[in-house]
Image 1 (cartoon, rainbow, N blue to C red):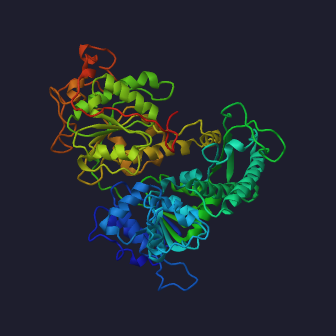
Image 2: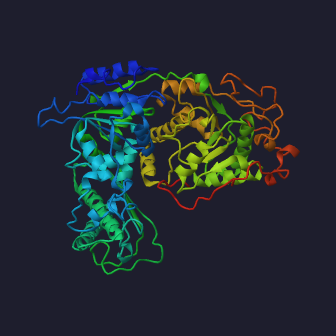
Image 3: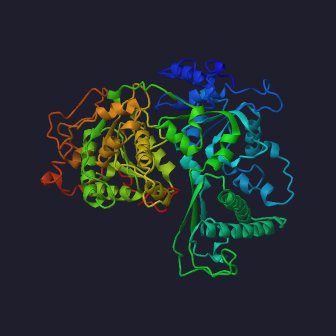
Length: 633
């Protein structure tokens, strides 16, 4: 690596904000001999451009000896982040490769077939005469032979040990704050009817400890191998057979990794095992679940690693010589290093200054009580009424509500519909998140989008969104065995840091440039407690926002005004001329203590507004399927 090239490799024609100083600090950190540099850069600071400059410092093929690693990897956990890179004219030399399922076959009659189910993987010995034009193999060949290969973190980890994507000189990981959690997720083994192709044939024992789980994993791996070999012996496979074969191969790798790591006395990984109840009174099958001759009585099994250092070493740290990890929310260097298996002595932290005026990104306290599971029933109606009043304050501006879970989203949508403002409210389904989000972004109407798990990787610049609401402090679910285990060990600082990280990420969704502006409203009083408990881990620029936390003047509850039908004394929270224009100071405000919400006056009641419709489109959508995250408590 040659850090001196970092300025020459910066892809933009000029610097903005603190980019020039950031490049200088990154260069100095690598020249000081650090193997890893953490770059804590706030939202909107141009992390992708900084990442490109670092990647350009990698040793080139011409500079390297045959045995030396050359070139760079750029990787990010977020698919949307990779999409942004693909669309950025300044980053055209980041050669992107995606998984096979993202490409379609080009053979006649197969134009709608994903490459991972194409004839070349369905038929033994198939010789494809157009493989050189196959979009997947073409992109793979380009990415593997160019200086910078770009891919998702999932694909990057899956290609560990690949002859195609070997070790490189520099690895850049964007949005790296959740690296430990992503590794834990990728290394988690789910054994159940949706993940084991022949689950109904298995006899699953009750798993009463890790040793029992390891024996069962060994037995299951052997069965998967036999099943896979049977498929491989066939001349031709159906698309379903291909999916089963690939899943079996993946499952074999997962099970063998767990057994090997668990039986390694030097491994630092702590493993946890959870088991659900069987779906219907025990299981039937011809073989014992763990090879011990016992009948099956158990249900689906989840095997989870905690702080999987060995997994990260194999999939990440062995893949490069030097690393740059970028994020706005690497909150504590030492804690982060412990989680991902790095030695803090060889890691430098570079802080990038926030150049967005703090007055353009205000935090408002409109807390109405706690949103814990036990107290949510009492608090949610107050939250919904407050959202109506915020909508009144922003009658002509789009808003985003971070609902935290699909349960909260559904109940909020019902309450807002009952209050008569449903025509201005949109939700997304679990299986249609992207489509529903894009439809809202494309609309010119000042609609309010009730979102779930959209605190990260969402760019709502300018008029795409001018205000947002945080409905619940995003504490991790304590019923998760990993969370419970850490809290039993007293890791409360980690628990609060995780929630703070999500809040900071969320606050960055609506302010994307120095001249952009957007307000964030806090309705869960637990957020204030979170700020107090995690104060020492706050970046200075976010602490400045918290210090300016204030109670806004909200208009009296009047749903018709939220629809723009009549807004006496109404107006935008920022006003059409920018963030310094404040409207509503002459109104009577409920304030942060919730006054005005407790007593239902004539203006506070529905008064039949639910029957009014400002637009013809549907005001709500169902959520038929669960997505990858368990967001309901």
